[in-house]
Amino acid sequence: MSGLLKSSIGRKFAMALSAFFLMFFLLQHFAINITSIFPDNGATFNKLSHFMGTNGLVQYVMQPILIFGVVFHFVMGFILEMKNNSARKVSYAKNNGAANSTWMSRNMIYSGAAILAFIVLHFIDFWFPEINTKFIQGDWSGLHDGEFRYFHELQHKFVSPLRVGAYVIAFVFLALHLLHGFNSAFQSVGANNKYTRGLKTFGKIYAIGIPAGFIIIALFHFFNH
Amino acid sequence: MSNMNLTLKIWRQKGANDKGKMVEYKVTDISEHMSFLEMMDVLNEQLVNTGEEPVAFDHDCREGICGMCSMYINGEAHGPDRGVTTCQLHMRMFNDGDTITIEPFRAAAFPVIKDLVVDRSSFERIQQAGGYISVNTSGNTTDANAILVPKENADKAMDAATCIGCGACVATCKNSSAMLFVGAKVSQYALLPQGQVEATERVKNMVAQMDLEGFGNCTNTGACEVECPKGISLENIARMNSEFLKASFKG
Image 1 (tube, rainbow over the protein chains, first blue to last red):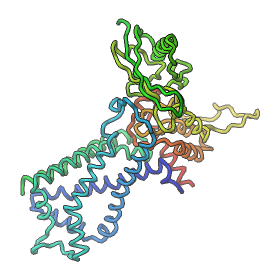
Image 2 (image 1 turned 90 degrees about the vertical axis):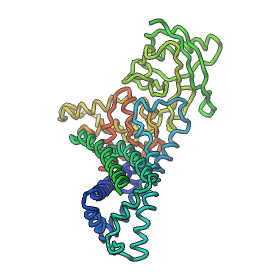
Image 3 (image 1 turned 30 degrees about the vertical axis):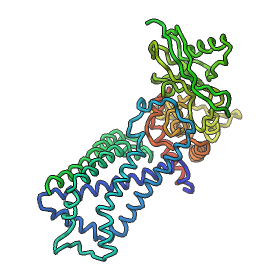
């Protein structure tokens, strides 16, 4: 067990584990967000948001794990990219990468960087204000003028066409990242059995479906505020 | 089809510590039936006749099984054809008037010795770290057929064992990772009962040596599998990963 993270396969395994966690988180995030387009004027969304925002397990256990997962995944991603670059000191005069691999697989660092930029915007939009309200001002009521604030805050963020545009572009990059990343993670942990083929199809559906869903949510609120 | 006239852009480098550069050459009247190495022979004969230093390149069997030839042709290891080594690449894959770029396999762990010749002894050291089984040969050896092996496993082990260690996987990989090679070498034993005895130490030692040699980290692009002249499958990397993780947790 010792020195696992020092080995190339160990790092790959750790990258995959953090990816699994992030993909599960994404699914959970999507499941809650999709309720915001339910025709109940945000009632379900408010209820779920309040639960997630005030539940001790979510706030004090899952949230720190999530933050660690995000930071670990991108720091490790950058470290691996740098190590891999130094594994070839002289680059090819002519390299035909498109002949043997997908664009997504060769550009994970760029799609990853785009997602990271999005996370910064997303944190400024939602997470920092949440942390400020709850942990600094100590207001755990989830209320604003006597009503749940979550749904209104969400609607308010999708008024600017610039921000909606940025969200849409970011989710396109997320889809590109997942199109390679989903199955790559399974390969990294050594999955190789009768489920592998089915998993590949599921991976494609997940990689396109989830980001497309987030785009639909953003556009829905943009056109219906 | 008539014979071809070609422009070649070839990496020339005098020695391991010299600075190399791409040099342009012309060859004429190349038959489509020639192999790529025969075309290189034509060029070298031309260079010798004009008093120039011929282009150094690795080759041995010229029938696709020794794993010596190693050129990066038009941006692909062993050129544009699939399932072949450079020696078995035919000139009919190219057209009259083409410019062909020829470079050595590039990786920090495969330093250039001269021109297109690279030092692949890092692969030998990985093999020596664990790519073997220990068999008593003192006269009381057991017939290998006495040990039952499921047909499917025997076939998969044989597929893995077809790796000729040419290094195309490393040359192709954007990360210069050697995981397809090591995956194949680990798999060919991991799939057989004879390989079980030393399985834990084998995978740990081979992976440790691979990392020590300065190969990059695999990001599962799958380019190696496509360019491999022997069609070694990515399954072997997945198997190595699970073997390594099992071995690491064991201690």
